[in-house]
Length: 303
Ligand code: SF4
Image: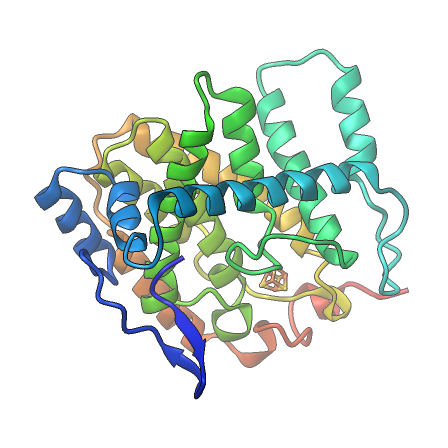
């Protein structure tokens, strides 16, 4: 996605390609959507066109979706114990069999959302191929919510997947530029919180949300992860990370739906939620930032 860096002859340098609709904050993005009368995904698409053709953008995003699907498939096939010494058993395969064998009830969709995230994060924990979205530790949330969209939303399509990912990418640009997507920098609120916000925004857009509702969905995703520490047991991205992605994915679906039940107006803006995340992260003790020296990492005995 745009707004990043490019590797040139002088190493990694800031990309200075002029964009038709530059933005770094939620406020700027909303203003652009209003001025142009277009959704968030369209603003992102127009910016991406500065680098490549529409066909290339769509094909590239669908390739990313393919890798996400392959990752979920792999996660549902693999069984056994995850590497690293914690003896964490993989759960996705047996849960998949259970869900297939049981009659669906009113909350089955959420079981499937959790399952997809478990599958991805178990793959991540075992060195499998994942899409970094926005980080490996939080790689399960966007694929899980996209799978939810394809499986449970009527009329879901590849075009919708493209719009979902463009929207999620736009929110990712804002988070990366004005907040953080790094557990080492601000704790897990920056990883799982960011992924949740991106997925919530993507889902809100493909469910027909206005730019204001999309921004609201992203804001809910950030707000309700504020203060979340990074405390991986044994320094492995397994406990609490794998389950945390399943819960983060469920929250993203809920955030999108909650935003769509409103009219987009809300008190806490996305920018204020991100500012709070950044400041909370700055106040957070180092032991809660990917050091495995605080939280669950010291209260769960490794065996
Ligand atoms: S607890 Fe830390 S390592 Fe695990 S997902 Fe959150 S930020 Fe990543």
